[in-house]
Length: 167
Image (cartoon, rainbow, N blue to C red; front, side):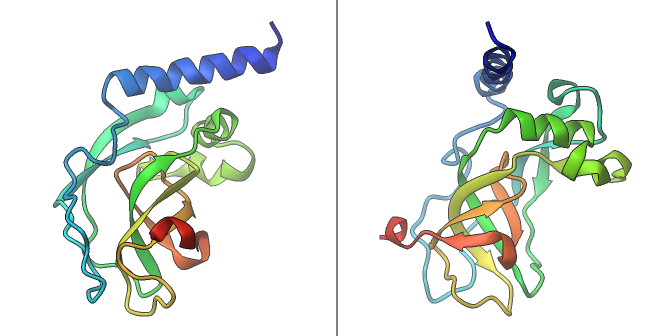
């Protein structure tokens, strides 16, 4: 077996463990599924949500990953969007680098607060800041950052519309 194939299988098994344990859950669990009003800048969201985070870097993803229940943000910065995560991409190499604080994630090595895991995701806009243009509640979007969570706060610079999926 090649190293790439071994690493792929190991990554799948690691994420399978989280899935089986219910640590990474379907976005329909514990989330209000009402149709949002497009006249508002917020949809109904729960007071808390679950996210896969790391408190510090370590030698592996499985060593540092943990599920935290966090307060759902209610005060977004002017250029931020709260995304209700529907799908998260699984990139084992990227998550390993993030967990170890290597390459593009060197800043994680000195983290003083838990940092989110999951590089990219797809979801719907749940709320947005006062200076956000081009998005409305309920729009389908893809984003970069903290995708292994039920909700993710994203800067508009890391968010893209998926027009055909909004219909």
